[in-house]
Length: 285
Ligand SMILES: [Zn+2]
Image (cartoon, rainbow, N blue to C red; front, side, top):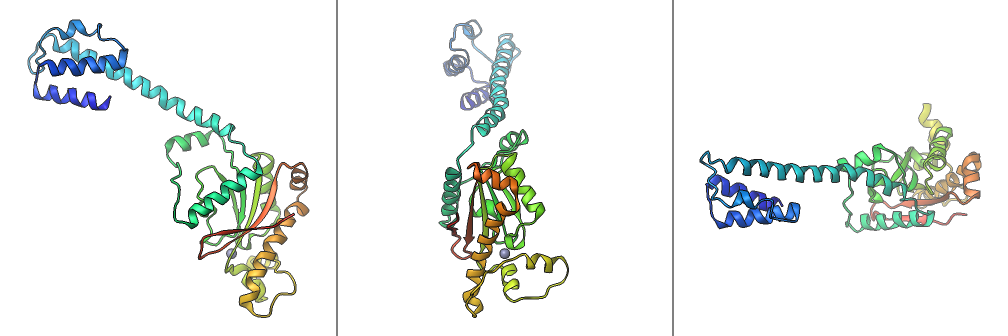
């Protein structure tokens, strides 16, 4: 359509009047209305746009009418777009297994430098303004190297992310996850630790930190019987901390415990490797 109109505009600018114009006009008219006969009377005379030929003005009006009609069609398509997205969003409910698979596939793309382009445009924003339906909750460390949307290659509205240093749980974090599971019906919760976590390392070092930071670090659980060497102990401590807080979600929250018992949510732990970009999923009950 655009090509044909550009062709015609070019012909007008040049003041050309020949059979070529008739051919293009018939084509456009046929495309818009499926028949050329309504245009025929206006096209029986030679068209000379630069002169005030009376046949030019009806044709100009008709062309504007055609453009208006095409614009209206595009407008309707545009307006229906967000509604269709909203409906598909409603229908986008996935199982915990499907959600986990989406995370695994997204992380594989990320680790292989084969990121899939995610829609963050106006239409997607408009659809999400009507409501959200994230397919997973991620409780991750706040570390700048571990942004869940990026390492799982997901887009707007896909993940409900709660971040705090050391990926620990507290009443407000539990409340956030209860909301995502209970109200937004997210079927999967992932607790995500990561390699070289400074918060876990601080706990291993038994650092006596003041203020809120000290309080946070004391919530980290590194586990028992760790090797004396810090380099060997840290990966185990990170994994233990993830498993500890994964278990705490259902121990500290009745709502999450009920949802898990009813198979409305699955809770899994994972550790992200900084250098490889890969997420290792941990076996949990
Ligand atoms: Zn960390």
